[in-house]
Length: 257
Image (cartoon, rainbow, N blue to C red):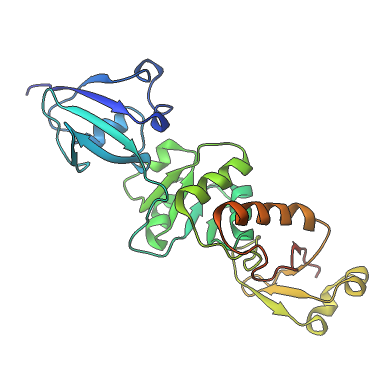
């Protein structure tokens, strides 16, 4: 079987994935003559979750395209905002992205999170079962075939991670409506009903409470208000959504048995 040689060029955003010697510009690759273009792209280090349109000699082709000798391939980055067809926009985050998960929940974004390492196969399968976009910094995980949809988190800093996800997917924001601990929905809670779970100082100081319908954690406006408000206002200002929406006054969540 012949081994066709093709030329690939990658969008600047994707060059961090490929070997350093292939980053400067177009690079030639000798294929095996039977593998798909998607396989070739992944073999060079780029998860298909990060690849946008594939152009062969100027025409768009699917990832299943088998390259012929002499073809010139352009690999684009994903469009932003990136559409996620077929299901409501929901996320699943791996064990290393706990801070990002809490910040997405603070903004009212549905963000499931595995606080324990359940393994790549189980995590990818969970993404497929619940039709959630898996967010991860693990390139190998994003290449698993059972994955429904995924996205690479480019930064290791929570502020930049949040901006990247909001810019890429443009989720609807509903601040103060979701439990940052378990991702459940918040509902107003009557102070008299939950009073026996509050410390004396909290009961004397605060009158407005919310409770998670899933884990029953209590929320009220507390000591970390300014820090959380800054996260919400910054995201709402740049990416849309009302900073005053939802349970605006229920900023700090601490449960007392």
